[in-house]
Length: 298
Image 1 (cartoon, rainbow, N blue to C red):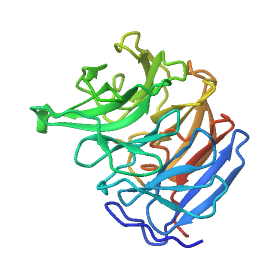
Image 2 (image 1 turned 120 degrees about the horizontal axis):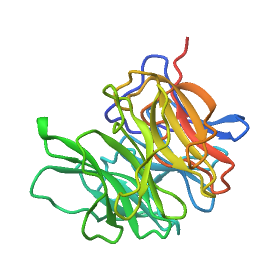
Image 3 (image 1 turned 90 degrees about the horizontal axis):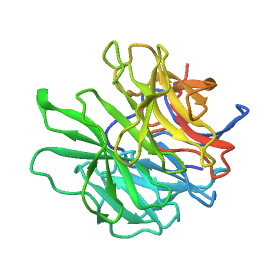
Image 4 (image 1 turned 30 degrees about the vertical axis):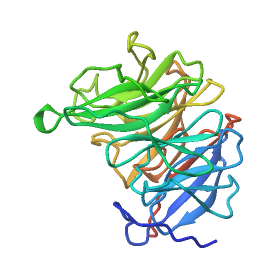
């Protein structure tokens, strides 16, 4: 089925396509939708009936088996990035806008409600997680500019309210996401890096950032830990050694491990990167996972 998405920001290379893919834990992968534009960051609705993804600053939905693509009305917002999360009750999508703020949008569509605060100094919000009770959002903030720029992890009430700082370090952090029991926030960070860009996976207490634990220790660059709804596994993406940040167009690995970091294993390798799994892409049954690959025709 043909669907033309808005184009904004990054574009595909010559001969490249976006492949929205569903894979099971045995490694059986099915491409459910292919696009000639950049689509990114699929996440599953709580009832398992749809995948939500972004393209060109907007949101769309599709059945997990493929088929018709349906736009989601986000009101005046048309500059969304790929950091959206769904409320546990399925009623709300929380989104990040390129204006630096977080918003709540009805899943059925409609005008957004701003969640984030105005700060006296530069402060840009990037959403990543929501607590199991739906009351708190976890996000990354870019604080300041130039040599004073810092990237740290915070939380904020989903209804709006004060920001709570969980990290206060000078090295980059990203991808903060709650464990299903609400105890931990998992994230990637360069806290233990011996060279720039060498991110690894960590977890910390979700209320105050205490109890820091490092979970991966290898030579790959590990990003975006996503916990399965049953709390038994983590999916994460691994970039080649020496990668800075989480760029597009890399040979990457989709890997799995236990919540304590044990039993690390590769589920599948492909050409991807930015946009592949920027949000939690687990199915509600914890048996399937969605991602976007970006293969280039030979």
